[in-house]
Length: 239
Image 1 (cartoon, rainbow, N blue to C red):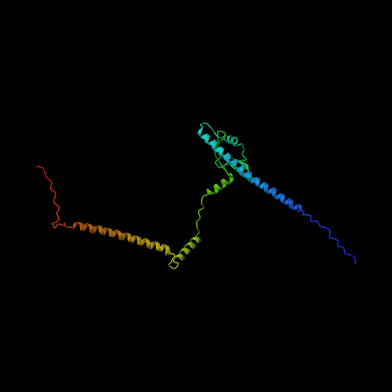
Image 2: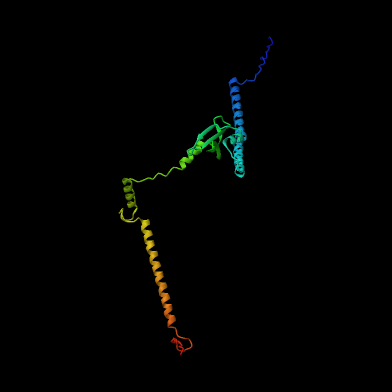
């Protein structure tokens, strides 16, 4: 019987699976987007915003020096030189003043941090009046909405009839519009009661004062002697 020979299975080597090229590209894109977002947030917080704040503070400080220095003025040219920027927009408000808007690019390209300065024309120059931060046009629109006059609402005849009907139904007199509601009737009764109590208190006080005066007039001395009678006054006449 021939010896059986067993041939070992050929060794199989497991090669690690390589990730698809598409996944690597997506991961790289996400990392780039994340890095750009962090850089934009850092720029917005540590560069753009502080720049606007510093420019606004510099304008206010220079304006304070103008008030304390006779003959010194602050024009739009001085402001531009002070903050090292030219206006991105120039507007004219309803009072005829010139508004210059300065912008600093924010972290996102579509956003800006704004500073506006308002100047009054004088002798061919634009004299500084006031400044502020924020979107000038939005601030102006919000101010206009707040300053609008209140609209007077006048009810129609139908609405007045509905009000009268609703008030009549709320009355305790079976819906009679000529009667008062429970709350109104209670208030009237309480007012009448308070008035009656006040009148009674006044009458009692008057009676007590009258009785006390009569008792004092009729009071006799406690030692048993007769009450003294008023003596007529005698006027001495000179001879």
